[in-house]
Image (tube, rainbow, N blue to C red; front, top):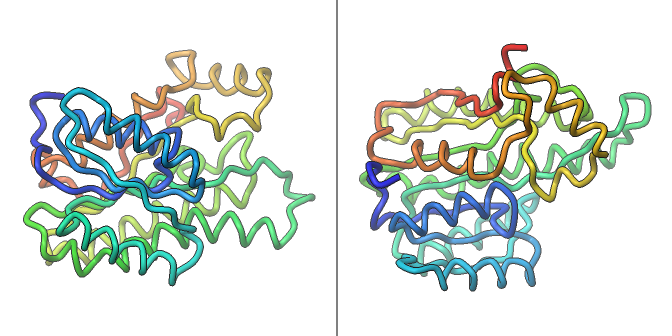
Length: 253
């Protein structure tokens, strides 16, 4: 990672208490970025922040508790982060909830909850961070979609697939609209990745998912974190509107 220019920049990472968000924040810290960790799980968030701050050479983190399905909470948190760090350069929207409910069983409450966190949270985080990103010299938005958003999913619910497909759509749209401000907007599309959110799946389901890509394994959080760091870097300044597939070939089928 030493060839990427990340040092001195400020990132917001949502869903940072664990999983992909945590590992992305960790990789950023180790490469000289200061990171605002955003999550709903207060105790877990505090522990994660302390762990990252203790890393040798860590540029430092600060925890911010926020429900990304709450627009007012997002606005308050983003303003607090900008005041604390003196600006915002990179936004990573990694907060998300997973559902595997069958089409016949999905209730509207669950549908609204998944779309509210995964898609609404992503959109409104960008909206509220936009005034600060416009002031950055190297502004980046990185949205975490999924292979499910590319091809409809396999073990996922339709609420999850719809939310992740929506992230791909708004990523392209935002790339177009925010390009004049030199803000790059990209999405990362992981395949099945071994994170706490995947605990909902049985070992049999995980083996089935692993068998569907070229490499015969599920991904690790660091696989995805490396792609996020590339898109956050100065070197990725000419990449926008892209869907970065980190899924072992799952997307191709």
